[in-house]
Image 1 (cartoon, rainbow, N blue to C red):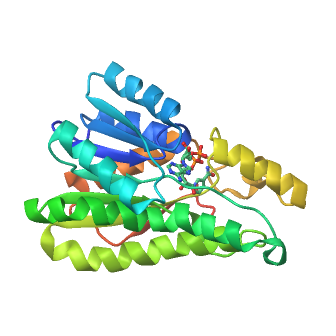
Image 2 (image 1 turned 60 degrees about the vertical axis):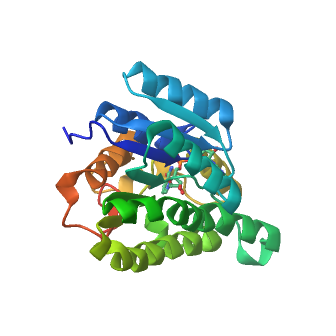
Length: 256
Ligand SMILES: NC(=O)c1ccc[n+]([C@@H]2O[C@H](COP(=O)([O-])OP(=O)(O)OC[C@H]3O[C@@H](n4cnc5c(N)ncnc54)[C@H](O)[C@@H]3O)[C@@H](O)[C@H]2O)c1
């Protein structure tokens, strides 16, 4: 549908959940895919799924918070495919807890994985994209990056930073042929993070995704494919006049 034949993509956090569906969706659209994840076995499984769709794949076990390791992994992806046309920064963790209870290590970990990773990957893929005057970066933020919620302040702050980074970088590289956009998912079920967040929310007396369902105008919670379809669009030539956007995919739960 989006004619991505011959393109190569890199997806962080592609071992499970939203990232896995982004990887397979991009493969369905014609991309070869490098799957980067701490969970090397899960990344390998996703890579097999991509190969099952007739595309090339590499699985790379890497901590996206580690700048040098990301440089090496992007080098390996480039070695496998010759170039990286599309980078999807999807890896992330959540954290639920009141600020007075959050320790410094947990705060730094959320920012290292959710925010530093976006800088690390962008820094690694951009020189070659700029040289070719072509490239797509898609960052998975969250609707919580647009509105702070109780017990989610560190997570919200880390995602707000991703949105601001998306805007600044987009303006910087637009004249160089690269677009940078963010997707802000709402409540997406069927992922490891959602199970973790729901368990932590129950412990804190906060609503779970299913309990929030009645507030969603479209009337259902989201699934990974809802996000992957939008990522495929942003990765394609169909979105060539869009950059610096942070697109809500929330079933109407958040509209700003
Ligand atoms: N599920 C939701 O409701 C929801 C809502 C809004 C935003 N998001 C965002 O979508 C993205 C994907 O979330 P998901 O629900 O699929 O989560 P998930 O937990 O199912 O998947 C996250 C993946 O990231 C990987 N990962 C974590 N830390 C890493 C690290 N340091 N280095 C490399 N890989 C690492 C994990 O191993 C996992 O494979 C995240 O950025 C999340 O913040 C999810």
